Image 1 (spheres, protein in one colour):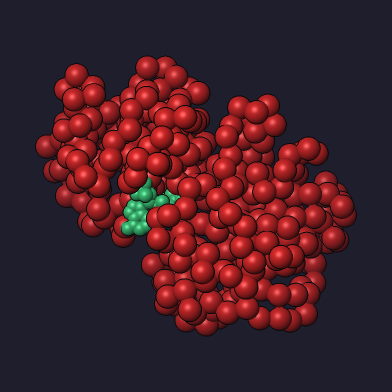
Image 2 (image 1 turned 180 degrees about the vertical axis):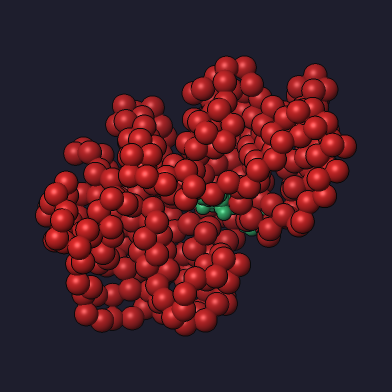
Amino acid sequence: MRAIRFERAGGPDVLALVEGADPEVGPGEVLVDVEHAGVNFIDTYHRSGLYPVPLPGGIGLEGVGVVRAVGADVVDRHPGQRVAWADRLGSYADVVTVPAGRTVVVPDGLDPATACALMLQGMTAHYLVASTFPLGEGQTALVYAAAGGVGRLLVQLAAQRGARVLACTSTEEKAAAVRALGAAETIPYRDVDVAARVRELTDGVGADVVYDSVGAATWAASLAAARPRGTVVFYGNASGPVPPLDLQELARHGSLFTTRPRLGDHVVTTEELTWRAGVLFDLAAAGRLDVRIHGHRPLSGAAAAQTELESGTTSGKLLLDPAA
Ligand code: NDP
């Protein structure tokens, strides 16, 4: 097998391509030939040490591929089936073992790259609009990094629920892209007073919910942009983590609610995982989700791919293709 591994936390140069024997499939697992591994921001946090992982070790959580073999006790997966997953550390590889219950079956006819794009980023967008703050008709949602991997899907799912999406992007090109996906308004968030602009757009009220994935650079504006008794969801750290928060800030901004959710807590059971992925697969199969693949890179280009994601220049899903 070929896989990306690292021995110490650091910059992209700590990632190395190594070769070794294929893994043995254990009880309850499937052995999968990986077609695409997803590159996600959380992989950069694992690499940098912001979220420590056991070292030396593999990297990457998400992938799609074809089952080569199944372990003892596995009854509902079989060789030749295409499956996808979102929480198998070590997924930047050409072959992996995954617990069968942490995989979902990719329906025939759904492009594997699309299925991969819908796993970690798609299910995150889904839990944000369906569970963290169940968005309803006519509510206003402020979405940061709206043209990113999670962001593009979040804009679409929020708009489909009837919400009015105010989308923050760094460039006009990204703004045009998210308007086409259903954003009602776009905000060049790095150049304007976001809270003031949100008040202008909401008759002075503020947003019902703020989805902030940028973190350090935007958290204060996010609190100021929410309406009294609104909800601010801090779900990412693209610019660095949110500093410790003084709870009095929530009072000062109008009895706000806030949370720091993780995907792992929203796909706890196989049933929940299957539900969220299934909703997204159905929407994509029906042509109701615009899933953009930003690009395909070879496995040996993992470090460069992470650098590309961290540069903020991608829009949509970045994939590693072990066969390339
Ligand atoms: P994106 O494709 O959204 O890329 C990150 C985007 O963040 C960039 O494109 C850029 O958009 C914006 N950004 C703002 N500041 C910076 C900065 N300093 N450096 C780099 N980018 C910056 O990535 P993902 O879709 O993979 O992830 C988006 C966020 O969602 C991440 O913060 C990630 O941690 C989080 N996440 C959280 C999960 C959870 O369950 N809590 C699960 C999955 C992802 P722009 O140019 O518009 O500013």
